Length: 55
Ligand SMILES: [Zn+2]
Image (cartoon, rainbow, N blue to C red; front, side, top):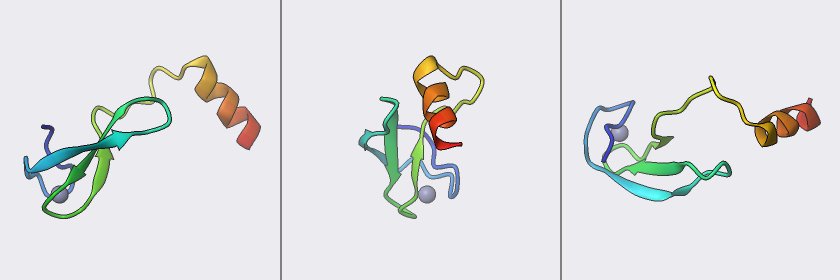
């Protein structure tokens, strides 16, 4: 399991997926929800379309 970005514990569990299909995790220690390896460097067409629609 990945390390929690806020409290640095390794006590994290899988917690479903975000809309892009990436694995989401939940920190069992502080309750923070996060996505492993969040990245903005490769925005796919679907994401770009969503941003354009929201703007
Ligand atoms: Zn935490």
